[in-house]
Image (cartoon, rainbow, N blue to C red; front, side, top):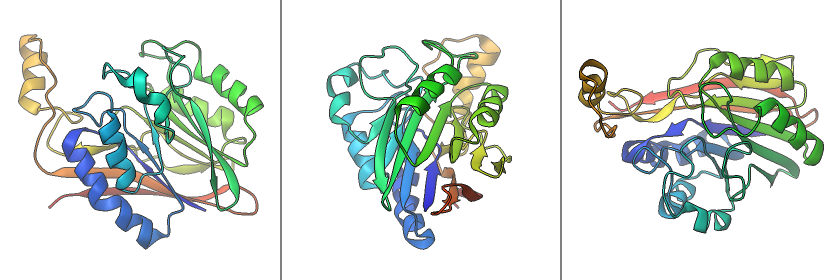
Length: 258
């Protein structure tokens, strides 16, 4: 089984990068499953039902989220209809959506879990370590894939070592900066601390450079306007052995518009 994992999609530029590349990568690499973080896909904060459908039409199979999941006011009303999306299982409000979904891929049960970090984050109800233990005890699956949406690299790396023997893929999202530490942990789990982002390359993690500079230098209250211009696509491709359910390779993907 081959899985493409796509980093945080930021605004219209990020959505365009997904539309431009995912279907092509699926065909060229013979990808069986695409998991994409969409928590910044609607103007940099949250997601809408329309954009959810747009990402699926671009070749995404499951959308993970993060701290901005409920930034759009009416998402609570429609999230239960978005059955190819997971939201952080350990983040308030807990009564809307699902934090783990099981899909069938190549006759395997694949559980995709979304969690939020506890360090430097808000609305976290309990440690992602505790929540993941509960999910592993409750969910029947052949393969577990986790998107840990977290700020602290140490938390993401520690989480990976804790669950490497019980998960096939653990990726980090949220920082929008792709890390160069892709690896197979404990001869079982493919991991990377952060997938990076799909969004405008000339930016501050997707936001307009001049506006962010004014915020830092002049203490201005700004809107974090999404930058425009050429985009970058970040993610990774993982191959899982069909007999052992262990990850056997992980390859970073990064493409910039010319």
